[in-house]
Amino acid sequence: MDLTIDVEDYKLNIRAVVVIIHNNKILVHKNINSDHYALLGGRVKIGEDSETTVKREIKEELNKEIEVTGYIGTIENFFEMKGSKFHEILFIHKAEFVNEEDKKIEYTLKNNEGEDFLQYEWLDLDKIDEYPLLPQVSKTILKENKFPVHKINNDLK
Image 1: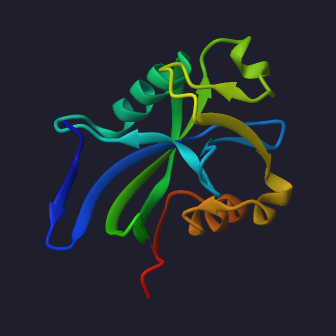
Image 2 (image 1 turned 180 degrees about the vertical axis):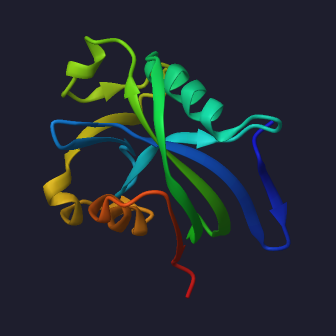
């Protein structure tokens, strides 16, 4: 069971994501029906640690094996989406593909689970401010390149 619960008028969400960088580009995902990008990953399941979560999510979504190579940080993220307020704890790990051929991928990837509305794109880190990447503070973390960090992103203020 995913660690998403309703608390008063909020949804408490525990997520884990990865940063995979090749040739100064970061792999992100986008729902083609939305106007923003997000880091790859998903909700932590009860009894599961965040490192296991990112490995599972990348395997499920892209059918790729990853090796977690470091811890980037934590974001306390407050935002509203589709009329719901979220209080999200976001764990960010650094990772690499295990397979040498996968490390050469620079094209848009499709979702392995049949969710055709999700696509995985490479964004140029030198132009990261030009992309609608959420949470917004993740851009700051990537540009500062000093880890581990703890940041608060509050879009509800």
